Length: 555
Image (cartoon, rainbow, N blue to C red; front, side):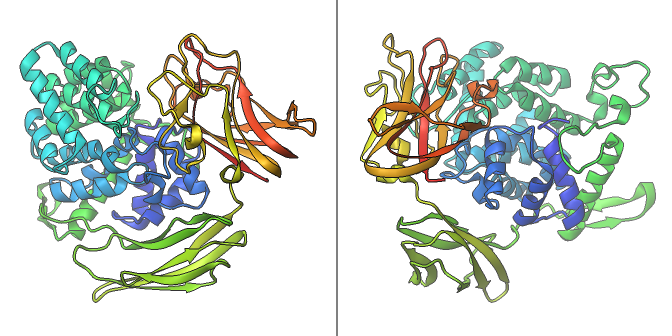
């Protein structure tokens, strides 16, 4: 098992327990139970948010999940489509819903494209037609829709020279040539890798092995495109389209891949037989078809399934509070959100419970919200009720008031490099703007210091025992710390080392040099001071570091 199959393996168990249309709360339950390691990027951030009691779709939301634009939802989309054969509109909407567990905005769009093609592949095998069917279900203003247009245009221009097309994709969607400032990407970016999937699908020309090879040769997060596209071609063309050398690696195997799925990555779930997993997935598909007004005609081997191809997907009705984690002493507005609201449905919202001291109920456009300045740290329980003419939903949701981020009260942000030369943000006040979206890096050509630091100074003494360091954007040239320590100003206003420092996850891990925006929790023996900083040796050939946020807490 790996992350191209094992999250869908979890989803299969969730569907069997809760039906073919589980709720976001059901999905969150299975993530918390089973998905605790062997996850990266947006998946990792989503799981971290679940550990803080967030539920989807907040776990994929821009502003909360710093990797909302990455590839993750593309890895785990197929199960929502193979259980909705020929149900194109349903698959498009369900893909967008499911993708928001980990992603948001255009980060979900390649997932929609893949999902629609999988659903269509039960009845369509031409790769160019599949590509177009997926394209037509994307939002009209979708950045990925434009990427598909680009790949198809470049294919016409360069004909058989797929390398030239691949170069054009890299230049625009990885190097960001002629792209707006608000376009985010990386080696595992959703749009970049989705575009490489378009290349592999079109140049693969419906041949299993050729498509697989093209996906691998395109590079970047190639295992995703290879796995997803190989599955698509096999579904469209049938299992006989798969060369035996890929299914019977050992000659003595009597069944493909020895009919065995070894689960080494997902907690509390067993190993499985591939034939059993396929049969169980097919049953979920049959259950969904029947749920959506399809039916079975006949019985036995001559039975036929009649599918309601126009069936819509209506997301389960759920309630959320946003934001749900507040800071003591910081003015805020908390708004209820209705997830899965049927189109055109008008709901009346009711709110009750013990409010955090400092917050009061006000009404905005007829809906209740909480406003004010919370004054007491703690967990509070808020009851939400949504009622319309045809539906209702009730939830009791947590609302947290956390200690204040002391960085917001600092008199000065300090950094070793104050005038970087790169194309990053120049204002290092973004270290405390509350968003991991932007980053500051210290690239300064040939003037890189031997050690770099970031921190704060206060006019009066504060007590500090914990920092949260959100790394910024890394590249092969640098962006990380090789070493990291915590220092504070003592009574003589000298920088001294903090004691009993622990950093989680391990900052020396090679993963830190590959992934953007990793969050590090740094604890140490509390100190009373007027200054704090993290300091260490910059990494990479270009010797620079990158940071998006540095939070400061008493404990």
